[in-house]
Length: 286
Length: 244
Image (tube, rainbow over all chains, first blue to last red; front, top):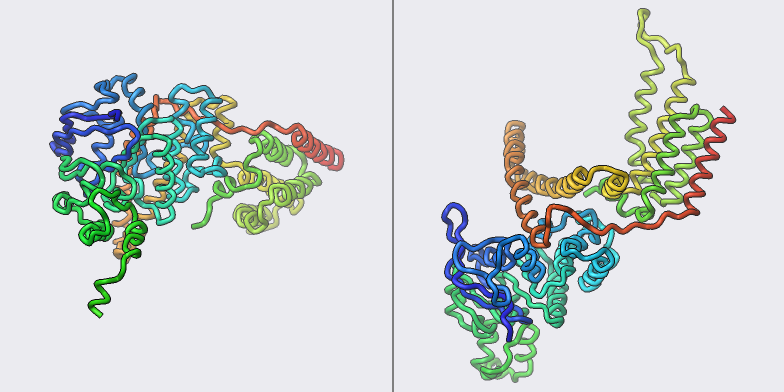
């Protein structure tokens, strides 16, 4: 498997001596989905901003395809063409008069000709389910629509990696469902996805790998099941196992789920697992 | 939340029409209203423009009334005061008299109708883009655009803060209210700066190089519609100058 992005001994201190990140080593595999899981203030967003050069590390380096990132204008342009960033608050990202114009901003900055850019915009709008909203100004969109426009703006630049900062923040149930469907289809196209979240269920549902953040450090990194089923490690990161994770552990205890089987992703999956079982415990109690 | 006139313009049926076409009609009629003697041209213009607004662009009558009544109210009060003269002998009827005032009112109302047609079908951003096309410097156009975008965000923030203050009884008396307003304004500034720096980050992530290049979708001008518009303007001009 190819490593597309990696960081070595990365450290970052905010002006005023607030240490945000220290000693982070992480490599991101091409075509996989990585969740940066951790509580508020654990450094996930700060880390995410290092991955596309929005922040420059005080210590250590970021590598794009094994090559140390250069923070010259050209180096940053190269990095940002390959690594798209979607901010937590879509309003920070949308500036143009209409959806169509906003999405065209990135491709034009990449130096694409008008026709090619137009094509990119149309593809991105199609992929994000935004067709029909071309002329809407950003302030007349719903939260979910704004989010999708923000993603489309990054996607229109044809990135290989898409970074999303708390992608479900502020979205309702329907908005989250739409977003998850969209991210799944992007993964199928081979786009590498890195997102930050404090929601263990979201990480369980989407991620292949998880990096567990606590107080500016990565305290655990591995495949999804490896991190999520380690109760002690989750607690150390001030997260707690959700009902879903507890049920997965229970299913393993009861022998309903083999230890090497694929870990269920949604509550739907785990319910299905339990509903096939004879209700033994309840019967003996009754 | 009530929608602003600009938001209606975005939803208008004529939103997609080229700005030039709408401007030719609305501004053309406005110029005629100003330059021709008010009778009979002003009633003609009012009828034409109102017809186009309500039947062509399908602006709902209620909506139109809402926006027309406010300036109409100003006109009426202005007209009433012009009817009278305050002189040495106290209040007297103005020597200019009724016909002049009526003419003025008609002419002004025609102007309002023209501007409303334009405002209710053409969003600010479209107007800016067109001004840019006819030579407004790029910097001014871009700054206006960003300001236009940020004003809505700032208003949202301000109204959320206002609600939050009210919820904690920040406006319980006049003194409190003043204090709360001061706090709100003081808080708004750092927030705006914060927002600006985050926005800069977001733009940089998409390769911003100091210029806001975006693709504009433009509709080609329709010769048919231009011809009709010219005919309409021509006939009003003819009627206005022949029968005055």
